[in-house]
Image 1 (tube, one colour):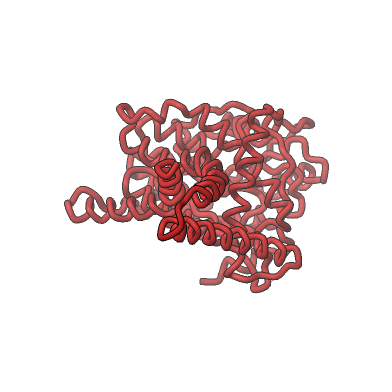
Image 2: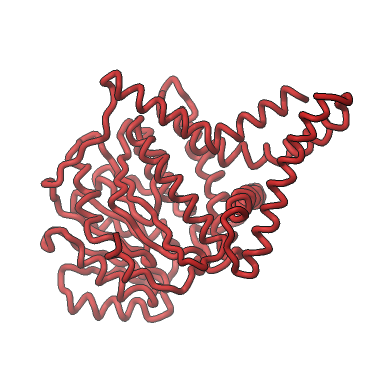
Length: 410
């Protein structure tokens, strides 16, 4: 049991912190050996680009999204916007059609009476894309003005099949714990993506902003929940690189509440198990080498292993303490159990404070880590039940404060 406890503890540490340290060391060793450098891009490489925005019932965001998209610092004659408003019932399709008539060829709209889901919308959009590069983004986000240019610059390298932008969460001073934790999580993820990109390839793009070489896009199954992850990993599995551009970012507000964030996290966890099943071939290190190492370390352990390790660690710690002889051994297991107890107590306090819309840094990190792992367990249960989605789900509500005016901030 002692060996099992130490193994589980190592897996948890490695999944959350250890892999980041290992990747950081490997990147610097490769640099010192002249084998690695930060991926290059060509700012003068400016092919034609289509910006695709699936927009189901997004009328609250469409006016700002259209203006933000067309205000990109990219040659206007080389950038077009394609909105997919299929199934919308809030006036989105009618509004988009009016703007299409006003803007001419810069905006195209794909409508339809049926809601088939985001993946079906993306697959349908690609049948109408003729430009060499396609960029996907969500309707409720705002892009920085240089986003498209900085993403596209990476495609000057023929080995690059896709480019992941950065997702940023804008949180106010009095933001709820869910928002604060969400922002911290994505900052850490951004740091890891930078290391991944330099080491070999990004392991999964964020759906809020990512670009694909159009000729390499392959339609994914319509019921896919994590389209961005599956698309980018399949491209990496074919031997291409997925680059990362931190200076191209999509800004959005955090979830409105913990309940809304839980809805989103459970769907992501469900999609994670679905994706791991469909990407099982990437677990072969003899075929994929570095990609397998990155995929297992950054994704598989965090999704499929550590959420189950945490409760086992607590149970094993109690048993080992009960069996320990009085003396140093009992003190050791007692201190470890006290540490786990304090962590979960802080998580509970963070949850209670969040319910009152209070934010305390000492509590929201334990709360958010515990919350994420709980959502993974719920998502695993949904995956086992085979809960049908057809690629459609209820979008989690975001905090109400707009983000348009934030884009000009440093």
